[in-house]
Length: 248
Length: 85
Length: 197
Image 1: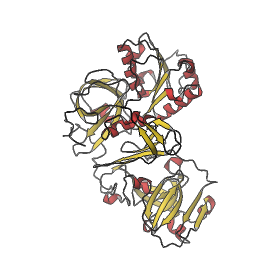
Image 2: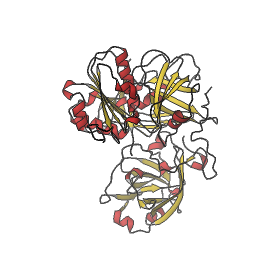
Image 3: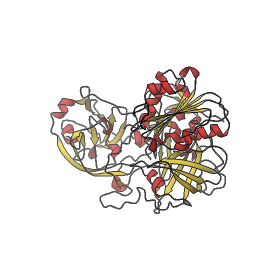
Image 4: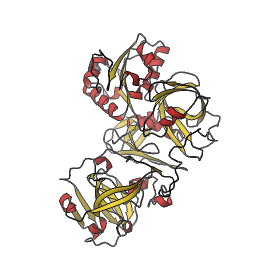
């Protein structure tokens, strides 16, 4: 590798030093983190970034996180859920403070993305913190005034585990949000708590006949279940884009 | 858990090597002939070592081992790679 | 210059005389997978040693269990930097399996169900150093940890302890296996930190 994190060309593979400007609690285990990253240069909705932590003895750990924000500019938002056996996520959730520096590499990935030029219907399906890249798409959709019909199915354990809850509880005109609670639903909720099923996809998702583009993001098991149910419902496999989480 | 992630995950590690986004490049599997973007492949063994397998037949497309001072990349499972420019 | 992350220790900061350099202690049993987990029925399971003379020594599940099964208490070290101390296994010693095998070759390629391979010198499989493991922690070995049977060579990095073991092939030269072709060390001694080429 040539150069250092301060190399001036802003090439994607170069590490950039961001400064944490604010941290917001999203749930008991989740935080959203806003970072100013000089030379970030904006990102498309759905892209991710690598975060590198370095210990005093030189040991480093790198993990990928989806970016919850989209558009031009050098300010980005990440949202991170603490994985109990993780190495990087507990640090980002519990130790990181405003004013801290963080090394980032990105924006990364040109495939699991949505741009306002797309006019077809879009089905978003997120499990847990899998909402993060989908949130970037929702924000980009709203900011651009896109009239493409958007639907979101968001599966979380309980309402308290939801990220971006306030924002998603008052969606814009072209977005329909369906909540799926897997452990505990609010009292009076018509659907009993339980994992997402093909019936949920059929009842609340765009039908396959409409040929929507579908974005699925979440833990491996969630993505497997949803992706195979979608194909069984007649969705063209090529229109279903998935992003599985690794352990972080 | 035999956890794997999607080929999307390769964008960061490979950005050190390529000036293009490798995850939107399409590759032909030498095993079954399936042509697909790398983002759709199945990636095992992250975060430092990657075994990239064809989502269609499970055959190994490529492996990447990152060590402190080098990258070892093996590509024998692909007939070709087409890169958008 | 790298930015030091305030308060970050990660898994690089442990100093423990029982741990080889660069390893951290873990209580759980992480899975390093290079592909989908094969599920092998013990009815179909077979283990063989192929020698230079093209002779095949084969054991099925019952035949393997008819051999003496030993208790093994050992530390294990994975190249992805986790170590687990004092793990308990049960398995058949490779000394027992090689007792009837005649060979002049000094190297072995281990082959697994699912296509994985790894190379080991024969000397490292003999002398009470290696087993075909059938149980971990008092229970049958589950598929994600290499069940029904895996190779166990605890004095080398754990990628050498091939999961879903299917057979050993004698070879006159030390040829690289799956990971060894792709950057991992031919021998893999954790105490010498032989991780990569």
